[in-house]
Amino acid sequence: MIQDFAFLKRIYNAFDPFRPLPAGDPAYVDCTEVRGEGDILVEVGREILYSDRMTSQLYAGHRGAGKSTELLRLQQYLDEEGCFVVYFPADEQDIDPEDAQYTDILLACTRHLLEKLKDTNPASLLNWLSDRWQDLKDLALTEVSLESLSIEGQISQFAKLTANLRTEPTQRQKIRERVNPHTITLITALNEFIQDAKNNLPSGYSQLVLIADNLDRIVPIPQEDGRSNHDQIFLDRSEQLQALDCHLLYTVPISLLYSNRATDLANTYGNTQVLPMIMVQTPDNQPYQRGINKVIEILQKRLSLIDYSKSIVDMFEQREALERLCLMSGGHVRNLLLLMKEAIKNTNSLPIPTRALQRSISELRNTYRNTVFANEWSALANVYHSKEVENDALYRGLLFNRCILEYRYLNEDGESQVWYDIHPLIKGIKEFQDTFNRLYPSEK
Image (cartoon, rainbow, N blue to C red; front, top):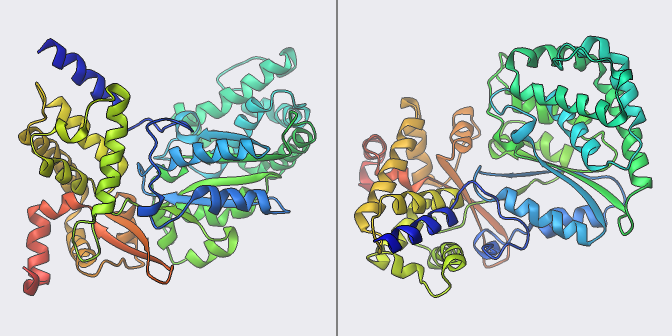
C-alpha cells in the first residue's frame, strides 16, 4: 500500500495540466496529423524567417489546448535559425486577464525587452520614464528620485510600475490614465532601444522576435457599443501593437476570430494560425481511433517518465475506461490531464477503478454545467446538430469558455476542413439533453 501511494504520488504530479512542456521535453507528442496538419514551425516560423519585413502575427486556440508548449517549440526553432527570441507569459506578472487593456500589453512588452536585452543601452526608455517620473512615481509606490538610482535601479522601477498593473487594482486605472497620452512617445523610445538591440545582438543572431503569450486568457468584456475589449485591444489598437520594430507574435482569444470584424483581423495581421483540438471523434459522432491513439500516447509518454515498463492501458481496470477518458476530454489536453489527475486522486491502489474515473468525469461535468447560462443550451444543441457555429456574441462566449470546441482535418483533396462540437462532457448534462430532444425530437 505504501509503495502504491508513493507511485501514485509520482504519477499524479507527472500529469500536471498547468505546466507547458519546454522544447525538447521527452513527454512531448506531435499531434499535427490529428489537428489538421497545421504546424507552428511552418505557418508562423517560416513567415518570420522568410519575410524581408518585420512581421506581426496572431496565434489562437482554446485555453489549455497546448499553445504555450507549441510556442516554446517555436522559440527553440527560431533560436536555432538565428533569431533572438524574447518570450513571456503575460498573465503571470504583467496583466490581469479579468481587466486588461492595450496599455498593459505595451508596458509588459517594454518591461521584458528591457530585462532580456540587458546589454542594450536603455537610455531612450529611461529618458522617457524620467520625463514622466513625477507623475508616475507615486503609482510605482515609491518616493525615490530616479536620478539617484543606477541604470539597473531605474530599470527595476520601471518593472515595479508595470507589475503594479497586475497586483494593485486600485492603481491600475491611474497608471493607464497617465501613460495613455504618451504611448506614441513610448513606442518611439522603445523602437530606438530595439534598433540598438538589433545592431548589437549576440554573435550568431540576426533577427529579434517578441512573443507575448497568454493574451488569449483576457476575458471578453462587452462594451456599450456592442463590441468587446478584444476588439479594442487587437483591432482598434492594431497599429500600435504592430508598431514595434521587430517580429511580433501575440496570442489571441479564439472567440475573436468569429466576430463581425474577422476580415479586418485577417487584413491587418494575415491568416491567424489556430491550434485546434485533437480530433478524438468524427463529425458524425463516431470515435476517431487515430485521435484516440494519439491521446493515449500523450498519457503513455508521461507515465513512461515515471516507469518506462508501465503501460497506460494497465493503469485502468478496463481498456474501455481509458478510451472513455480520451473521448470525454474532447481532445483538450488540459482537460485530459485534469481528468487523469483527479482519477488518480480518487484511487487508493492500482489499477484505477472505473468508479474513480467516473467520479472525475462527473466533477468536471458539473463545472461545465455551472458555466452554461439558461439561454445557451439551445445554442449548444444547434452546434451539436449542425457542427457549425454562428457569428454571434453568444457563440463567441461559448467558444471562449471551451463549451464549444474547434476541430480540423484535411479532406481527400488536401483542403483544410473546420468543424465544431460541444464539449463531450456537456452531452451528459440533463439540461442539454432536454433541450436537444425538444429541438430535434427525430434524433432522440
